[in-house]
Image 1: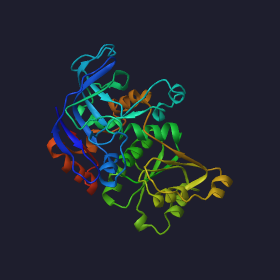
Image 2: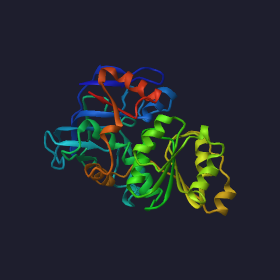
Image 3: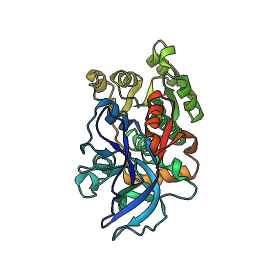
Image 4: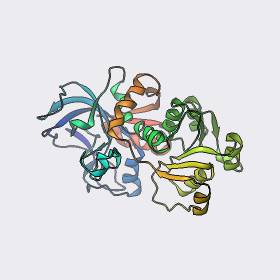
Length: 340
């Protein structure tokens, strides 16, 4: 099979012939229809964030396709079934999995990080982490559900615990941020979206933001948020991954509110611990999504409550995967997919 192979930080992905994986017992071989291009992969390529499996490695974790074959005990999948593959494969046995927190499984395996991922013609995954897609959801766009939609769902429902009527602040309107905006709006929240790019703020309006704010045009964004919300956001979600934007989000939270960190950052957050204590502010991390919630997100897309197709603004064949990452780096793409 053809695959785009990661050979190390600072090096372009190389399209090569690789052995086609063979499904073992309980596993499913998926012919990849599309794989979303995510900033996580840019961390490996551009910033030297190490992968768990040393290169060479096939990146990519937002995968949709059709079943090509199933091993013994493949959970009833048949050749040709349209499917979505969970971004993180869970053990189902550890304490965290058994307590309903499979997204932080003690033995979790991330596609395109611990094992080969979806920038290839085929990928293999456990049948329990593969989900059928209804005919209403096209495979090319459906791929981004695996991370770009499920990650915001988990952050909002299980970590932020939003309820209808909450004021929800989203800092950073990239691929994850925009889906935080539209998911929060779909769940009945009032949404403030923050970004420095007018084009991203226009996207946020289209996806349901009630208010958009550009910090470059606002002298004190935290004061403006408190004015609009009469005291501050009930929940602030940071989707950029810098200490500056995390601090900005924290400063906009009302007494008794919550800050949820969704964007990855290696930086140290300078947190005012006295403010956290005295105002009973919760500071929470959020990682990925529980596999058990994938069917819920798929159903929200099927019902049209979450928009999908228009978010995939760019499509590239595997041979042009370098252009896909250029579109991501420039901010030109809301979400790009690679079509092997």
